[in-house]
Length: 287
Image (cartoon, helix red, strand yellow):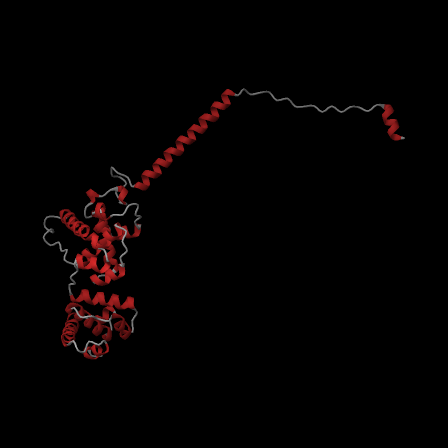
């Protein structure tokens, strides 16, 4: 189906600039890569190009109608949108102030900006000198993750899926950046008594190793068993073992002391004495 025909069904036919921009993005998409490899059909491709064009030009786009026309589920459509969006190299600009106004979290704006700056400084300082110049933080996922973690720390509700959709990234990438940001800047983004998923930490080990010198065992780290510090779990197990051994030794010592103080008494077996009946009694009973 042609882009112009889909634009009519989405009430975008009057926006000639949007249709022209979407057709341009569609041609660029056909030239750069085969979208069928990532599971995006021709109709869905045209709809996604229309949405990208409308978003870049600031025109209102009805995504629910686009999902219905594509014949896909909303989750599959968002996944295809992110794949196509990232494949084309289209950069989405996200401003902290705009996010704060949209989600109603204006009071955390300075915390997000300060935390994001601290994360950039610590991440760059952990890189070799040859790689520091190539560090790129222009992608909107960093701003989105910093905003989400600050909102969570201040106990404000933010729709995570909507935030991922706005920054045009995937859930896996959002989670990876979130893990590294909490690890490097736990004093800013960390939440007290937060339990980390071991599988999540293991899958993002390369990112977590960015600044190992500043990791703490109580922050859920995975320091080596041979190192000077032990994990919080192993410390607790060692303390429990020591407490048990101490209690066991005290019980054994108490039992031994009681045995020494109480003398062993010689037991005597009681005897049962049966009274013999007289001959007169036996005769009476017989009668």
